[in-house]
Image (cartoon, rainbow, N blue to C red; front, top):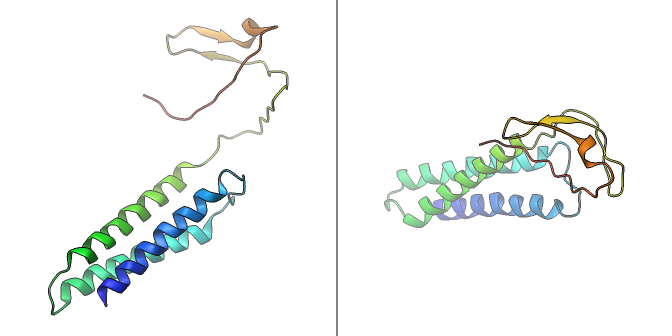
Length: 133
């Protein structure tokens, strides 16, 4: 019984990952992915139940159940953590290909001041990313 539960947990978690990731290239990721969150929590709950069932089983622990369940819990937790990180920056800045670059000033990694005025008349690839080091 624990084997079936752990298999179902892993399938739920991984198929939810696959479905969510398939939406990204098409630009159809929901603003509030409540369904994905619910399925991840369900998969993780089933995985924990499978581990407990496996532990209390008369036959003794089965490595496959533990492996599937542990994978489901870790992947589900990672998915939920990634969802928590996906917030976009505050603001309504929308720049498209060919648009004129809005003026701004920023500090470079060397501490120097950079201004978009330095780029007048040049083609520019502007790339923003989150993170730090």
